[in-house]
Amino acid sequence: MQSDDETLAEDLDAALVRAGYGQGSDPAGLLLRTLNGSDVRRRVVALRGASRQNLVSDELWAALLRDSERLVRREVARLLAYQTPLSDDLLEQLVSSLTDIDPLVAERAAFALGEHAYHAALEALIALARHHDDPRCRESAVAALGALGDDAGLATIIDALEDKAPIRRRAIVALSNFEGPDVDAALEHARDDRDWQVRAAVTQLGRHEND
Image (cartoon, rainbow, N blue to C red; front, top):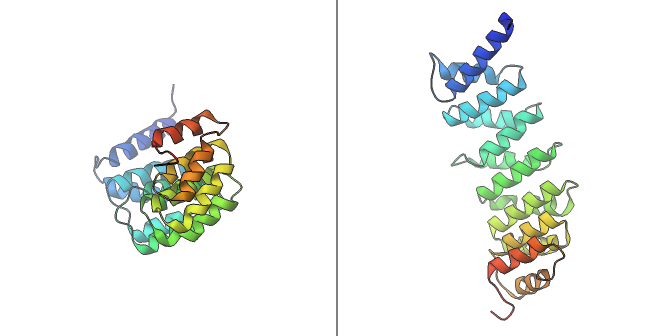
C-alpha cells in the first residue's frame, strides 16, 4: 500500500506531464515553479514541458544553461538545438558551454551550434574537435564543422579521419559538404579504412577520385 507522500509525488509527476501539454488549472505556473525547485528530475521534466509550451524566455534559457545541475544543463543544450530562432546572446552562451566541465553538455552544445549553423563558433568547434578528451565531444564537433561547411574547418575534419572509428565515420559524412583535391584524397584514403562502416560511408557518398 502506498503512503500519502508517494501518492502525492505520483500526482505531481502526472500533473507535470499534463502541464507540459497545456493541461491543468495553471500549467504555466506549475512548470515555471517546478523549474525553480530542488528536484532535478522534475526540473528536467518541467523544462521539457515549458519548452514545448514556449514558456522559456531567453533570460531563463541563459540562466539554466549556467545551472549548477549538470542534468539541467544537458537538457537545455539539447533543447536549444530545436529552438528557432536563437538570439546571438544565447548562441554565444552555447559557445561558452563547449568548455563545460560535463562532456555531455559540451557535446550537445556542439550539436546545437551545428544545427543553427552558427559560424562564429568555428574556432571553438575546431578546438573541441582537436583537443577534447571525450570522443563524444570530438565527434559532435566534427559533425558541427561539417554542418557549417566552412573551408577553415576542413583540415580539422580531414585530421579526424585518424581518430576513433565513430569519429572517422562522422568525418566522412562531414566531408560531403566539401569539394576539392584534399577532400578527394582523404576520401580515397578512407576507402581502405580498417572499419567497414567507414568504408561503407565513403561508398555511399558516391564519389570517386577522378570525378
